[in-house]
Image 1: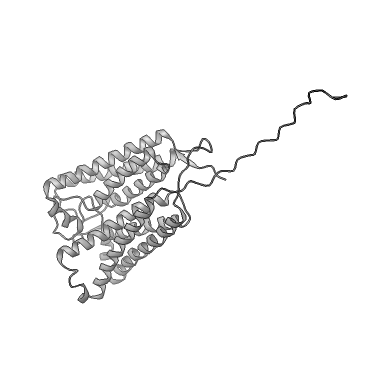
Image 2: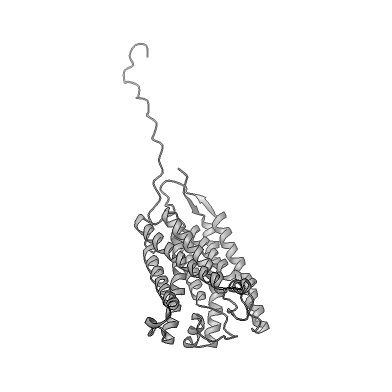
Amino acid sequence: MRQPQVLAQGARIVGAVLCALLALQTAAWIGRDLGLAEPSRLWPLWAGGGPSAPDIVTTFRDPLLFGVYVVVGVAALRSAVAASALLTAGIATLACRLPGVWARGSEYMHHELREQAVLSTFVALALGAALLITAAAGRRPTISAYEPGPTRPARGPSVTAFLFLGAASAVVAGWEVHWATRSRDPAAYLDRFTGSDAIRAPLLGAPPGWLAVTLALMALAAAIGALFHTVYSRPLGMAAAALLVGTGGTALAEAMRRGALAGVGSAPTATQLQYASALFELLAGTVVLLTLVRRGVPPPARPTTPPRALAPPPPASKPPGW
């Protein structure tokens, strides 16, 4: 049996410092936007229902990323799944920040603000890549059979996470296929991944198509990992579930703010399906979070080599010819 791998103490400290830097960077941008707009005005912008605001650069995913960095930073110092947690934080950082390198549609932003956001994006990408390197290179075998190895979800939580994450991945991917088949212009559909004047994402945001595909892949990978009781399925599944809660929750909150849910019974079928999908994403993410937050089970015990039988001691009185 393969010996379990844990994160070395030095790598734990490095990972915690990287998470702290990412959390501070994210908190600085959130604090900046809160200083420009009250929470009551900022929330519709985060939910995607407010008018474009050139001075607002964050989205609802930034508070989620901040929470991920704080939780992973603590887990890096204390948890047995520190390597998988750092890997998850790095993947989430690259997934949410990478479109800032190529996304268009931000030309209306102030030139100085755009430069600052682009620089912040490259810094975040460098720190996210450093998290991946730390998680991969900082592992070491457990010293003894008594050292706790990485835990993994139990059978019940694994089945629950597999079902809900797999279904949520199918729902998100299904809607993206719907938008792809509905669009008659390939260039217009490509704007869902690159941004455009019609699809204006904040400077620290990402186009909707990129986010949908990324979320579907993260949820699918976590679902498959949960099916096979892998170590990484807990942190990756919790990160995907948090994004599902944010995506579905903000969509429903914006619909409630506009009063759209009052007449949902008479709305077109596509609109009803959109609201039902958002509700399912919210419920699926909540269930998975509550399920995977439980402490995992330790890995199977490693077989130990039985001690060799010792030869009997010589008799007290030696027989003739001894």
